Amino acid sequence: GLVTGVIGVGQDITKLRMITMEQERIADDLARLIDNANAPIFGVDTKGLITEWNRKAVEISGFTKQETVGQSLVTHFIHQVFRKSVQAVLDQALSSQEVGNF
Image 1 (cartoon, rainbow, N blue to C red):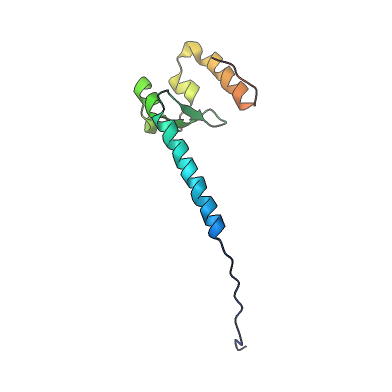
Image 2 (image 1 turned 90 degrees about the horizontal axis):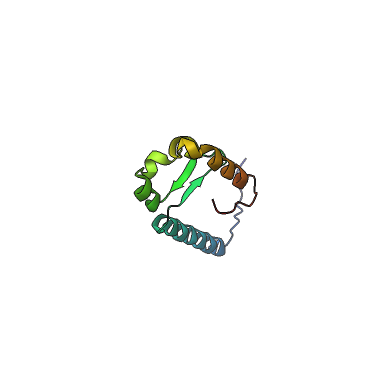
């Protein structure tokens, strides 16, 4: 064979790009809100490893975000006296149980 023609398909992705840009803007706004909050905010994954550590957490703990991310919150950053109770609260939260003030 010889090529005798070409077929092209196009799709307008303007709306998709606008939605994606809006989602990125919202995510950026939320990340700034967390990082600049006047309260320590940290995140952990389902294994209890730190995924987020805001500026106030750095200020209070003395540990940088780089030092904490990927580390076990309970094992490395909770005093031994409180580890069992903190782990219990995390386990409850991770199993979708409501957790009151701790």
